[in-house]
Image (tube, rainbow, N blue to C red; front, side, top):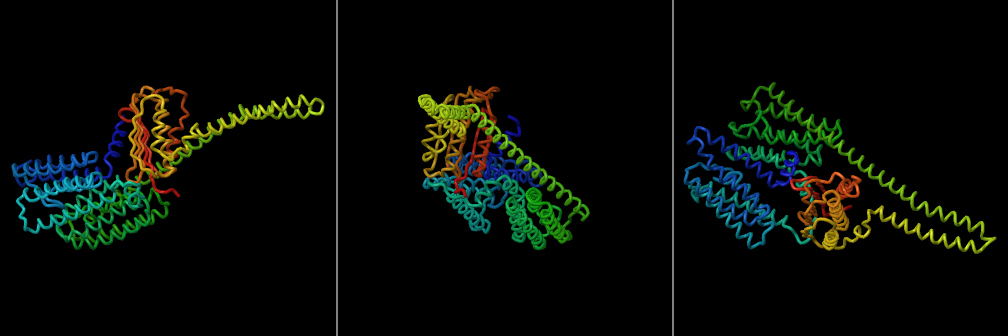
Length: 565
């Protein structure tokens, strides 16, 4: 498999939780490695913090499939890491929670979320209590933090807030007995999770700097948080988001004057999160908005950035304004170029889809024309000829007319059978399957039993009230995938079919272990199977992946369960 495909699959596997955890890990690596070789303490001793950080990260990823094991493993890692720090006299550093790294904090929140979401309540309570006790042990024993100190009280309060937030969020998204209606916010998060993960990296760095500089730096963090949220919203409302970002930039000019002079600002005026957010907003404006309107908003953003930069330049040791101007123009140029690239790609993708649809429609029309000419027209022509003969001979020889009427009846019956056969061919020979979706579970089992070729292994976790449009499309996707396995992967020894309701979506996955596709598939290939599947998924506003994987071929679709208008 090409490296790009492997990277795309790994990125999809990480998801939002994994990307946020990766951002926290990168920040911790930057902090720990730089601290390990500074002028304080023995060289390299701070690297002893990394085993615990990496192990905690691994437990959070492990909990995605086994939340209970991952949570108990995370508790054990915290205790063992604390013992290692005490034994080696390494220096634990603090972020949101005292003596706990950012990765350990984020991983702990994700472990609590995973337990609440997927584990039975009493068992989840036991596992989360164990994790909380381990975190308290780490916070009080890594640097002998007094129980009555203000730092310990702050850690308790912050930890309680994080714990409650993780529990509440887990309860909200806990898999319900009935598929819940997804909100616009959850749809936005699901669609833009890679961008959210990217924005977390500069935001975590800024969070670390804010905690080091005290409450006076918090207004800057609030402005950066607002800019990150607006950058995500720019994918839906780019003009409004860009205009509000301009307001945030102006507020930042005031927050810079409130922050301590020692607070480090890239380019002397704007935090890194706001710089990245501004670049993202420019990309979406160029990509989604008409040129004139997009440049009006970009011009407004540029003016407010210039005002904020000039206002804060005298308060820091930033480069001269000429250098800053060149850097700003370069950043703007990169953003515009990326936006133009995505705009061109969107246009090209639309043209490809339209061309594929037109080709499929043309192919269907040609097939229908051939069938009408070769079969139906033949029978209808016979009926017309026999009727003309009966009309001519009826008065002279009634017996010949009666004989002609019999042949007309026979030809009409054959024409009716041919027309019914044509209708079935137009419906792709799935007239029964198209509408037999009152019980998707039973339909999929029946489809698996009737499949020809490799054995089908089913894994079904379905709700009873899946909308008809979604169930019918899911059944068609599985049927088309099984048909393609028979045509393109005759050497496959196993086909795995998964259908489950999760997070307000119907998740369908069909994979086989046919390593090498047949160059000449059985029965030929029209090449429109994947186009048809993609059309079905797009009509339901879902997502589809179809392509080669490490051990064969995979078709995977996510179909929203909300009511379609």
